[in-house]
Image (cartoon, rainbow, N blue to C red; front, side):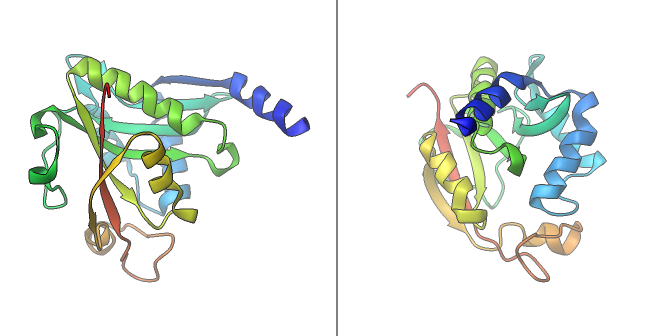
Length: 199
């Protein structure tokens, strides 16, 4: 009973708002704490923020608790990214020009289990749909504790397209990314997944 009260209290205290420059420091700090050093940098967050927009609509969101960033979802508008070698466009059920990109979803470990990730996803989908997207693509980290990222995205409607070995190796070799689970260069597998909207 005490746990239920605590969860309700936390849920009522959490607010959601579109990503803004005032959130950058908190997003970088949380992202690097969860995913590894240099997962996010000042340069990257500025780029990701700009990619969030289409027709002045922002698809990236943050969750705040006592004005501290406890969760975020970075989403590129369908017009602000291009498929690369990690994208199997011939297998996609939706035309690539109508697909947004779910770059990153992160929730503070101390705040997990409160529905923050699902709420952030819902809000990003609403805005991405408003921007004109019909689906969203993500590369899911299969090394997350208990494979929670894959389970979460699947639960929310994500479909597995293809698995990609060494998805983040380039970042670990050339961009200073320090994977929290691999010794040396990252060898983690990424799952290319698509979530179709309005289905």
